Length: 165
Image (tube, rainbow, N blue to C red):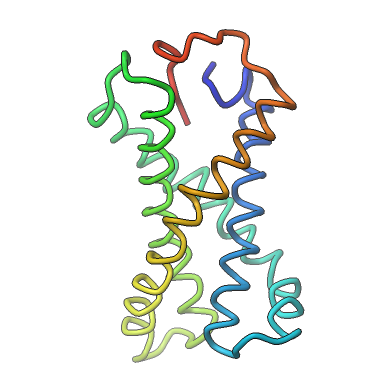
């Protein structure tokens, strides 16, 4: 099927690995920005994890993932390396998820009022500068390493393996 799982179950497991990590770390980051570093960061991140995770999972699978799936063939070639495909996928999924989850954070923190749009814009900037490097340099490479240890790829040809969402 793709280099992130031989079937839909394995692919879903990979999505869960990325989504869980990113939601928890980004929640801690945003809470720390609002409240400073304290035990409350972990406490509030744990308490708010389930709704944030569910919102992120829906966005990843049904919204952002579908958009990225449509644009990826316009950006990468079938002959590109798996590494190039993975970096592009990670970057564009990260950008889309920053937009998606920044809206969630704005609604949770200010509600649907006259401050929503400005809170959303501020959240996009704050989240982009942290989430994109976090995802590109730490979360995705770590998740891929763990994933490929759990589910070794059948075809080790890194030049022609296709990458799909």
